[in-house]
Structure formats: C-alpha cells, structure tokens
Length: 226
Image (cartoon, rainbow, N blue to C red):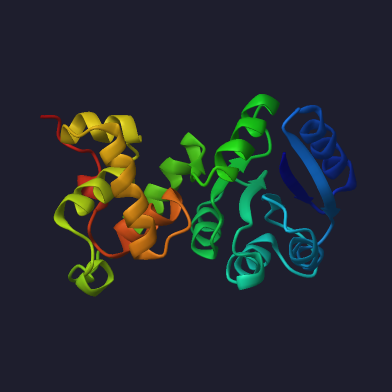
C-alpha cells in the first residue's frame, strides 16, 4: 500500500482528498494536517510515502514544510506532491527547489491525481503541462549562467550529460532511448547514475540542476531530431 498524508488548511478539501485516496485499492491515508507545522510533525511520526501538500497554509507554508521534510534525514524517503489553486510561477520554482517531486493544480481530475500519487511514490518527478510551461518561463526570465558550473557536473560522463539534457527538455525514457539510439535499459541505468551522482531525489530535481548548471538553456530546450 502507498501511504499518503494529506496537508491542506481547508477541512472540506482535506476530507475530500482523504475519501478519494482511500477509494483506491493500493492507496491509504495515514493522517491529515491543517498547517505546515502539522505536516512536518506527521511526516516525521508516520513516515508516509507521499505527502499531498497545499502551498498556502497558516503557521508555516507548504514550501517551507516541504523544505524541512525533504531536507531531514528522518524523512528523506518521503515524497511531496504539491497541490494548489494558484498557478503562479514563484510557487513552482520554490517548491521544486525545496525538494517537491511534483506540482499539480487542485482542479486536476481525480483519476489523474491518484495516478500522480503513484508516479511520485515510485520515485519519478511529475509536473502538469501548464506548470512545465511556467517553469520554463521562470528560467527564461533568469539571467543565463556566465559559464556552466562544471564542478556541479564534474563526475558526470558525456553520455550521462546527453541524457540529462534530454530529461530537462521533457523527454521520457523511451523518447530518450530513441533519440540517442540506446536501449531503454541503458537509459534507465544512466538516469539512476545521474540521480546518485548529483544527489537528486527524482527527475524534477534533475531538471532544475540541468538549467541551473547551464547544461541546458531555455533557447535550446527543444532537442534536434536526427
């Protein structure tokens, strides 16, 4: 069973999410939190697989709560899926930098939300298409690094850099395999090594690193086909 903690300051929404999660045969809720501080405390005591985290909450917002959960050795295995009604750029970037594995809007259809929980629990990063566009726009507004931060990628091989660049451009493992003419198993091996070498929790974190190190720029985010 995938164990889920629901954190939202609105009791009605918390209850709705709990009912939805508990209808799935492979998911179960292990608690509800109405504040960011409560979410951090319950994450430490319950060790859920996934936290459904609201952005705006009293006492401590969801981004700070995410930073504390993802940054603590006690809850290192807990994944955070951010949910918000506010499709705003600064939340997307801040949430991913804090360690969130996914970011969805609260009007996401129920079936897609349950699927997102499973994806995040499996260690994959997940972004809604509208959120991905806004994240890229956020990078577009930021000045490009004067030079790539080579030290950040010093232990990464050339082929692994190729894979990382394509991850940052939104390609799936299957698409990367086709683009680089590699087997799917080889691509998965490269992704695993990237996660390990760069200390990234999931693909969402790899995207951030690819842009912040200058490996990928917004202007070149679309790979050439060949």
